[in-house]
Length: 349
Image (cartoon, rainbow, N blue to C red; front, side):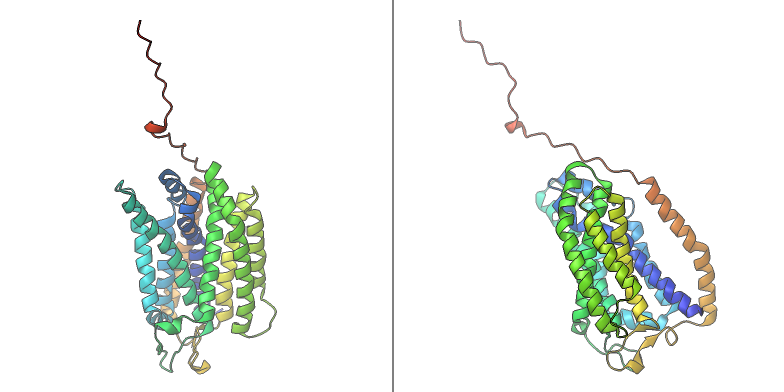
């Protein structure tokens, strides 16, 4: 296997790892106001992702850096085409990160509501916009013979790209629900179970529709590829297990569903890295957009050394924080609502 093909696989793994690991973070962020009825419960829901959310973002940085170093032509064209969309992604990432730190800085209800919306909308926009971008890679964008994007922002809003974004959004919601069931107890866990039922049906419908549409967009045989079949089976299992007490299997199934769907995009894309809707002769491929042999060799040595260490560290962090978080104690009633325990005054003699 040539080095540029190896690095296409590595970049695909980075993108897949990002959506699998950040997928449950996004899902929890979108669901925290649904499973939490009070500030304490909402804080409890967000605490489930506290040890990992910022570290999981690194996978997005590494995916972009890997593209820049291994496929500078791909990086230049894709990031130029998706410039405004990626700017919105960065704003959403900042809004989500800041909301973790600022939401408890004031007791003002409007302050807390504003940061809850920042968290929720940020977690909606990131998988949606990145999903649109990945779908556009396969669907095709207007690219000329110089490998320059010749369209505008609205050319990015292709029907297939939008549906890919919606499908990843639905999977992240289901992934977040299964994670909340795995990490919480009592009423928060039960609300996550209740939310998982409709979310499971929506995710199944989106994934099945996406597989059918992908077969039309990618060309080739009409029979779904093995990775697409795996995505359908995994989301069905995740939806079914999410309403049972098999929390670990439900979370694993939703993770496999996301990984299989994102992996399918890159499998169908290869040996291209971006499709030109102007002419297939202008497609970017692993050959015409890759770095030189020496650069790829050095990067491969670095990846072989450090990538296993990252996986070991990530696995260890999940092991350390594997225990469920106990639900917060029920809030005491307000003093005005609390029944009086004072003895009635004695009648005058």
